[in-house]
Length: 485
Image 1 (cartoon, rainbow, N blue to C red):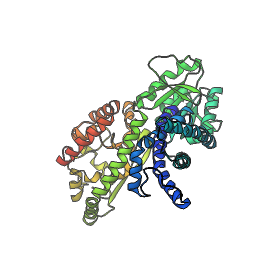
Image 2: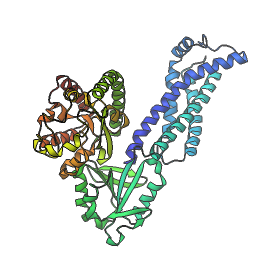
Image 3: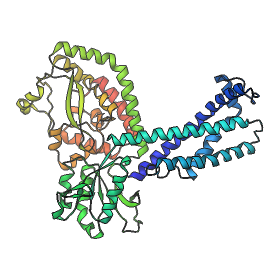
Image 4: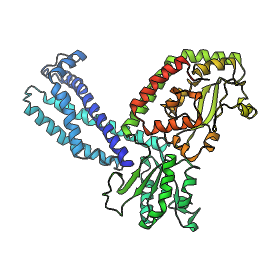
């Protein structure tokens, strides 16, 4: 859980440190030239001028230092454990570790210069580089820590936890979460099998039910993970709850501090000293989800810029041909049931939703979804933009905001989710998208059951390659207008 994210973010921090140390080299070059000019010192070897071309000439002769110094510094940082437990360590402690490890990195860099026999290396440049490296690393760490703290404080990238257990170990676990709000974890309630504790607050959190109530509770409130911190004699009681979470796609974790942690084929993690056994329903790694999000941001931003002329024309045509707003806004269910406002170009008359009840008998889709080929609510412009999928372009804004992804199960409306069978709720375990397997496999020509099974297939077989494959297929399907109604 937390340790997995820490490992991923630690690798990101290593990348930032390496880039900062690379950047220190050109900065040190120009500062060194400026100091020499002010103090009227001798020109250092291979330095032609305080220009970019001069720096390139200098770097080409000292490329081993340009690459070697960052490798040495980051290696020393790893040895000193700067990237381990950084989220739970006070910032001033991190600064002290950087100061100490930086001194050793400077000495190691000096030995590196000696071993390579780079006798013409300027001592002044070496000192300026070390000072510049310190400053850049300090600034980088401060910016990153402030960014992460502010993001979690504002509720971004938070996980909602349901804690099962109120014993001493459970209370220690809860206290660990409370003391580290910057981890982005939020406890939404507690579970205890003592009926007398129902509704009472323990350590500041309300007991919302008993173990047998978990299957009901996870479908009523937004929960990302259920943590079982329970005594050994509770184990026979929690199997049904774990299976219920698995069925709807909610990850669970079981504290195993009473075991020897030698179980085979399990996902063992650690939460601030609490050994956990995780049962993950979605197998993506943190770095894969990070790349997926980066692709979402890049693709949606570029698409919005390139498609803006067409979107402006579409908005104008909608406005002049029918009464009502240009955009249609509707509450949809996203990741784990989170509600958000979805944007589309309005393709129907203003009171379309109120007219749906009178058209129920004309529904051509089974299940809780309503679809109709010759829907009288669709406007003249609406028919065209639906056929060409132009009506979906504003959803790129949802992708940019983080409510949706480019590829993922389509976001259902609230009353659809209320009518889902339990197994169908697992499609909410992944962020919804503009397109998915069903989009390139017939769209409205599929039955509701086929649609749901395709979403499950996507979740169970997800990979970055699959996302790219679906994007390419979607492009050709939209051009042909296949399956769109």
